[in-house]
Image 1: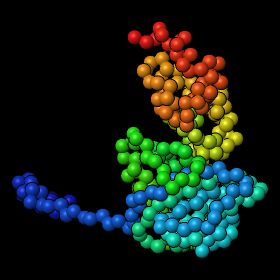
Image 2: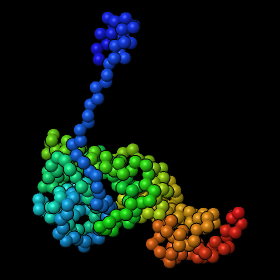
Image 3: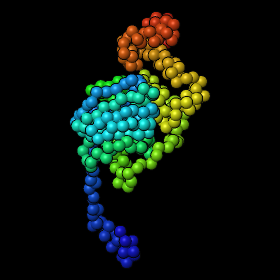
Image 4: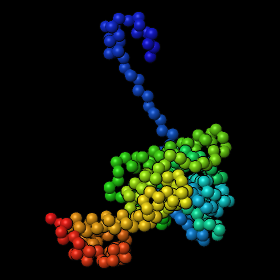
Length: 310
């Protein structure tokens, strides 16, 4: 809008002009669609792990957070190293094999895709830039908000959680699309993405808060290190300096604290508490509590919770 135009008009004419003007709405076009997710995993593969050749109707993203893999597919045969990803397009034969010298940590995401051709991501490994690693970490975090564990066991049917945070599913779609758009743009400019660099900006308080929010889900040190852009040794050192405990010890203490609260302040049965705290069985739940506290949870409830109930 040319503001000089209004200088030639009096106040009445300006108001009249504004009233009769109509904003011209513009349609925002979609360049891609990601509407369905098959799986979202963070694996720690053993050294001798391998998969049989497979193909399916959706794309599969494979990213190596640490270690290395050997990839075999219709379009690429060779290594996939730390900081690299490859995308298997729909109906592409593919398999992977872990090298005997290392036990890699790997992110695998399966999703349906409609849009521009992504085959350039399947012919050779792509080195992810730091911003794209950040987006991938956000994808993993958002996926945890939506899907129930386990995250490290292959499955054909990942279950959704009952209480999904508002907007999480849409956010996950948008993050995957943002990730793919970034890769397409980089490919249009150059054949080589930027080399990965260390993330920055995380604080140990963020990690502690994230662990507190996910106490009863399996979160490995390697997964936390990837999500928050640090390395295993730095994370362990800073976590212990902050909390006074190792990650596993801290989680155990916090889990026991939460279980004691449920025992003394709710009417849940042992089976219900085991389910609420994501134990696979009452037997495993009882053994965990007894090993930590010294007595079974039902005995603890009888001896210690009477005075706290009303």
